[in-house]
Amino acid sequence: MSADGRFVHNEKQFVEDAFVALAGRFIDRVAFDTFYTTLTAASTRDEFLRVTSFYRYLVKEGDWQIAVQGADPIIDYLTNSYKLVALFSLIESLADLRHEDFYEWLSHRQPAIYPIQDGTELKKLYQQYKESYGSIRRCVAFFDRLPPELKSRLCSAIRVKGQPMASIRKLAEFLYNLRSQFVHEGRLVLDVRETPTYSIGKKGATRSSLTIGALLEAFEVGVIEYFRNET
Image (cartoon, rainbow, N blue to C red):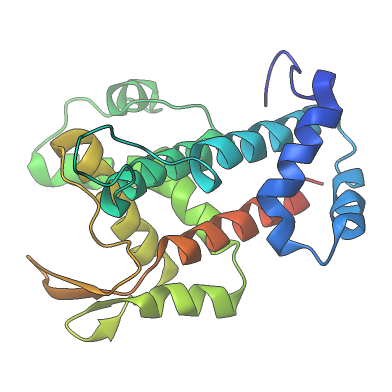
């Protein structure tokens, strides 16, 4: 949760940002205000206002623009790459556990596990770490709160060898991998666009019809479900 309460100290301004960010998920302003009043703890309200205001300016109404002569100022695969990074940063910021890197996690294990016998044992330990502290754990938990019908639509939008994603976990891993490829390898996100895209990878041909609008809908619903559980 936010430590200094800077958002609730300017509550009126940030509540308006939150409503604009999530207006499409409520029947009207009264329904939104009713939901907001359920966030009784000041720390919870502060966190809600932080996430929704950042989302409004960084993602929903924010675009990466270029000033290259002869080029469009907004190019979808450029701005969507940055939006995907921002979305997952916000999702990760809602984690219940503080970040702990793999070495710290190994060192704090009880009883002590050193020496690690071989690569197979190390791989098993790393898988356990990812399930407990890895970023993907937080992302899977976020997407898993979505309603079943929305999960199904999201999974159907990504097809590998003609088959939809087998689970919401697989979808979260796919999207997080896109984010990581952009952050760590400089590979632009081409799979989230208004027109279907095709790519060939180690697992075969992938067809994506996932739009940025569908991804924003999932994020907005996920944020509401997260804070509904917090209350």
